Image (tube, rainbow, N blue to C red):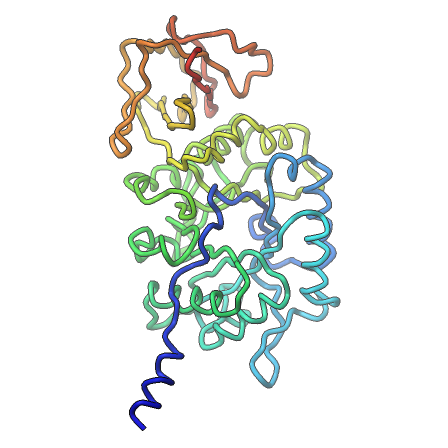
Length: 401
């Protein structure tokens, strides 16, 4: 009897580790929440997939079409979840097939608690059923939120869902979304592929939105909250400062550039949150700047760091493959700032990876937002430029051969 019980017990040992070899560079895609909140339906998601292709975003590297909260219908008698039949009349499998036919991947949303943040059925107690369901639908990405989680401990709850995904047998990227409350960077590396480091982003450059019981943070506030976290990021495990507000209408073109660039410098997921069907030419140019995206997608997977800050002007650096470096001059102030950056006398040192650019050698300089830049500048001379208020200058340095 004892031996039989022991053998059965072995069958229930769970694998609490995520699927390996996914998200080896920060995930790129689109999510419905920032623009549409609960107003999601099948036709809109299809249109976003179409637009991701037609606008050049797919060619720029965007892959995931992610449905956030409020897609849910009810659970059936066996407890299996179904999509809202009015909003998704053809079901999720058909929608996944459509998205896949475009060469894209489909993401979905659930919650570790009894209800999602939008009051739909959460996954608590149904984790293994939900994972089986998502796998059968062909889902590729799961954002897993943290509302209504009375009494749960984050690490245990996320280990349960990652074990469920593993058991279901389909490689699915797991986005841990518990807002950084329980320091997911300490335990998330083997559990999920990315983890939110803060509360929700708010569509402004430099402000805080107080909702009473919780706060949402502007782009600069979110940026500041990444301090001290860069050592936890790397291929397959990323700090997630939340989705992009680029193109949602409240940021200026310069603020959009600064927001997008800093997420690239942070090696953050680039998950657009705007209406892809009606983007301005300027928004498309920001979201599809392949040279800035290349900084984000660099295979070293090193998160950038702040070199200096003076009167609202910050200098950031990010080591890249093949000895290249990205350098960003971020102007957080409301006045233009003059740069006179002398490479020879400036110390840039990555104290985690123990590397720095060697300015005894010469680097060529490419300005990634300046279409007129012919790439002939080098570090032989100081870099001089003016950074407009709430804007950024972004350079790629390449060792001269």
